[in-house]
Image (cartoon, rainbow, N blue to C red; front, top):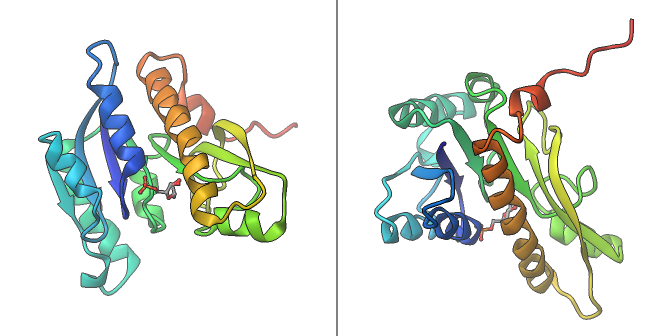
Amino acid sequence: LTVAVLISGTGSNLRALLEATEEPAYPARVVVVGADREADGLDHAADYDIPSFTVQYAHFTDREQWGAELAAQLRVWNPDLIVLSGLMRLLPASVVAAWRGRIINTHPAYLPEFPGAHGVRDALAAGVAQTGASVILVDDGVDSGPILAQERVSVLPGDDEQSLHERIKLVERRLLIDVVRRVADGELDLAAASAPVPQPR
Ligand code: GRF
């Protein structure tokens, strides 16, 4: 299975996936890493001799234009699966439609709890004892797609956003590596997961 990973930040989850793909038995390969800015995480692609591209959001007048260039870059590699791993940008509907059922996203909360760009901060602010990590299929909403994997993560006394996020990322990485493996092995059928639930007649 060929995988494109899209990032905006440090790419620590990307790094974990790259390490997993080093296992000869792991059934997926990262073929390209893309970013919407000069993300530090692009260094991980370089470390693994994997091509990367940057489609700077700031260079485009709107999301659709940015998305069209992103899609053009992705079509060069035509990946089987796109993994959003810390991409802090909503994909335009045109990109979601072009790869419907083949884009997954990791989120540092127990969706549908705390969706959006500040899931860790929001969980802390809410004072919950447990938050979590989720891997979902990307649909046209914000962190609203079918849940493929998720696990609870405890909030510990004295946690701040950084310490809690680090603990969540450990779980996110394990879930992501497992979901990609299950998709590659055909255990997890994303098309079935993305099919709209048949409405009762
Ligand atoms: C991850 O927690 C991801 O779920 C969230 O942003 C974080 C990215 O971290 N969207 P990194 O760039 O992989 O270190």
